[in-house]
Image 1 (cartoon, helix red, strand yellow):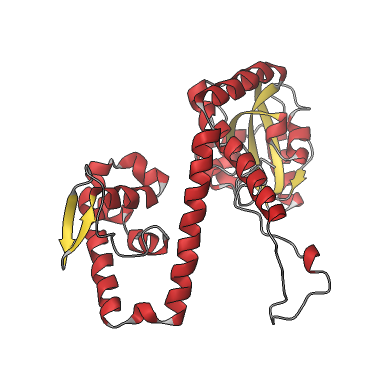
Image 2 (cartoon, rainbow, N blue to C red):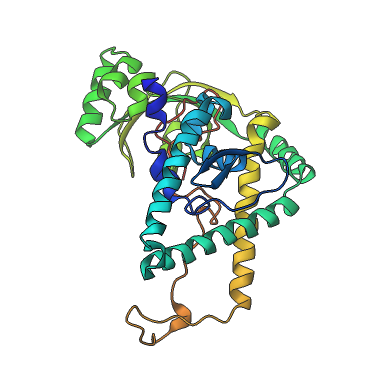
Length: 322
């Protein structure tokens, strides 16, 4: 029970931060969506629980089904509704800041709904299959290596590790002892199989020069630090299965479709941009625009070291993908 409660430790905050849930339940829902609770006469529906389940982290949803998570989810939804009702009773929903936040939440919900409708129409099984066929056709053209690495903070540390390897030290053992890559401390620096284009250039260039069983004789520097790399094996690349690749292909399609649609809408809209103090900018049209998360063709966040979809790769490892 304690472990299960830990999964939901931040659920209340996640629900409150989710625009789709940051409001009281609607008074009516379509048939087939039963009422699962009432709070002072306000109904909560099964669809509310499903929506809350979707807010949970992916690893939690892998461990708990909707049915298993239901008791805690409904408790959290009831608590959120009770608090929202208390806020309304004190007329806090009429405050200017609350109204502004609700307006922004509404725009976020509309944006999500708009993109979802577009993606339903534009991403079909046929298009995904065609994209997968192209991927499968190209995959054998890429050589892959299975490698380990040891990541440290300084060049001298990397040189010391290379010196130990030359004296016969075991690479995996040193990785567990020395690497600053959290996953590497468990896996012995194992990165699984990857293609050259999957890695940041400096790392890839060094790794693909090595033969099976060789390790780098000089430290390799990247934005993450200093690496010592060992290639365990090499092979001609082969395609992953459709089920393994389809989610990534769908995400790439979605990113491209959204980016193109946003660009079109931007071009069609009459936009005026001012400085923070409301004054006119010298060149308002040159002001930078924010890009929707992932719309640049990659997931938002820092660069990563190994692709999450690489065969044999461990989850939550440091990733060097550009």
